[in-house]
Image (cartoon, rainbow, N blue to C red; front, side, top):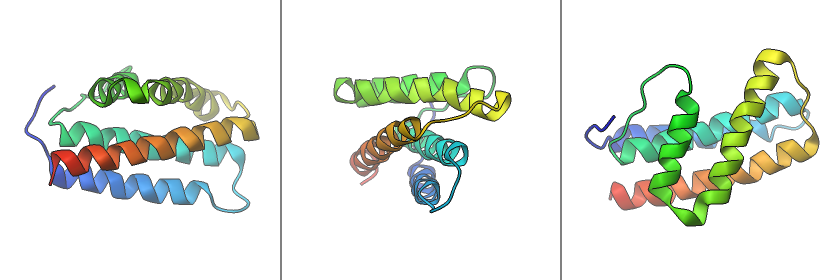
Length: 131
């Protein structure tokens, strides 16, 4: 759904993304907890992109998939691999949260890299859209 750009919300989402990302790197944190925090960092970065673009995704089944896809459309081809990684992480995060699946260190590292990429892309997008 299109709405007026909300630069204040976009900046707030970026702040939360940075906090979750930093918390995910806490020494001694379990891999499942780190995975969920990295995912939430990226999800908030996606929300920042959408807010800066004046887009909003309503709640319901598939909301995260729709939001990630919409952010991917806004960011374009250079970010395609990262967007695909986040969408895969979305499914994995659901398994970790709702089905008690384990997460490997490699899974956490891959999501950390995608979350960092997403946050950097969101910062650039918000900076351009919200001078």
